[in-house]
Figure (cartoon, rainbow, N blue to C red):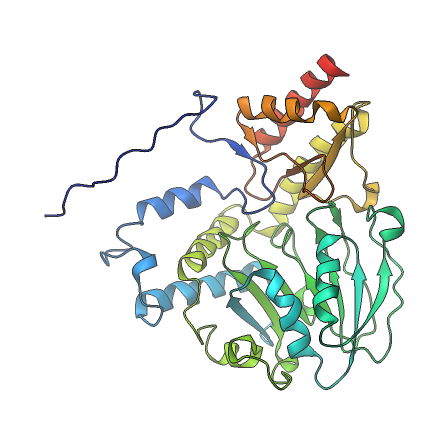
Length: 377
């Protein structure tokens, strides 16, 4: 017999008692689909009759190997990933990719071009500068990163062109894939909107994304890389950071983030049950419209981003009277809406409304904002 559980229940000291789940507007780690969490809970002690939790499995065992293979298969189907692209399940977050990309893609060249649209692309530039001559092909810094520049000045002899397609902090999103010279690999940090809409993978040399927004728990990073770009890592590149070696080892040169991969696999299946990425895009457009329509009509709340470049995933906004910021956050929390405080680098508020955020959460937020404006506006 199993011994009695010695752990005591954790007291639920919460400012609201009439709901089992809150509306979590965190930018990441972010909300996950309830169906996924429920399935993971059902399987936490015994995955499919093995008597083990996935966290306890050997990554070399047949059980976990089947989980990993199925996750890759489902991701390939969702994004229609061509066969000449490798899918890697790595660690280190998107931030590690800032260095891993030049290590692998310079391929003997000394130049790389970057587009700067906010804090994350700025960080990518800073890291790449340790490896190559970085040229800023375009930037929106002249307007405090509130738009996505459409005209890029790309050098013809650059190794690759890098941009962040959705800036989580500033709420700026490229809604179309930028056009560059066909022979130049386009590299994209898609962390905060991957799987929120269809994406033509063939237009990219490499796509990377941290998992903790639309895919699963923190600790997992997805890299989708065109096969011909691998195998050219510069001398001194650590083995686990060599894309070709990781691809040859099915992302298992070292122990991968097994449980995060398992949850990601459940999310992929959930997305398929929702109708795939085209259906998710419709839902995300509708959710974003609810919030932006209110912001545009409000005289108290304001979104700073150019309308054509507004993110569907991350919606920053400010109050007319910043003195009321704390009161706004406390009032939201009492109603079961949390993580609305903006990033420390820009202040204000931010509502992240990823795939797993139900439309009811956005409706409740808009309703609360209307009431707050009526009282304080």
